[in-house]
Image (cartoon, rainbow, N blue to C red):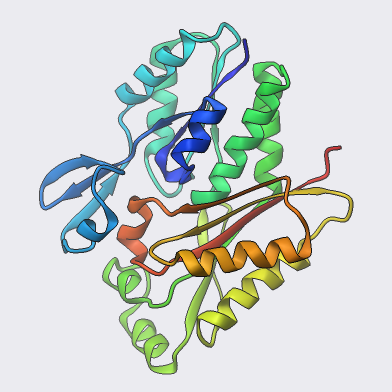
Length: 277
């Protein structure tokens, strides 16, 4: 047996990859016109047709149930890797759920989201597959957090303006000047980078950030994610492969919870240079 790994759906971990690795995923929630639905139950196209959509994390009870289910499969403990605690109440709910479940359970705040969160989860899964103890798997996750980066672009600030995350004048200026906003997700939040003039320039800037971060002799794990922009995400993945062949690589979609705040067209690249040989 091995340490069981759980995460939440904000990790944007493809379902087939989660199943192959035996990783449990606890869904986030959406409130659409007053009705609660699990993330993934509503297609993105339908979601964007609604104006009144809010988000929330899983409840402590849902995490408790997920931990207990995982405990039935192993005696080696359970590690839960969550969305950044600064972005959601999900981490707190996971801690409460783990306490209620009892037993050997550790909860890690990944301090990030989406593909970067997924890469942390996969690092923990790799350690568990090697037969590491719960403490060692937790340490592998924490080391991966320090190694992981996520840079993303959105074609428009309209959704961020609507959510109150940027001032309206910034959204107007970005549209007027044809700028593509760039963000880096780290230390529990989104940090604005210098915008690019258009999508093509933004993708080039993301690849440049990846290239600058390269660690010679290290393996790289990457995730290219998108929201209704698969061609651009594939372009990012192809650009990475022109530089180096990743040890892990997948193309996926940002979760609908994130898209409520950013809108369609979001494209991002997460990577982790792993010096472990």
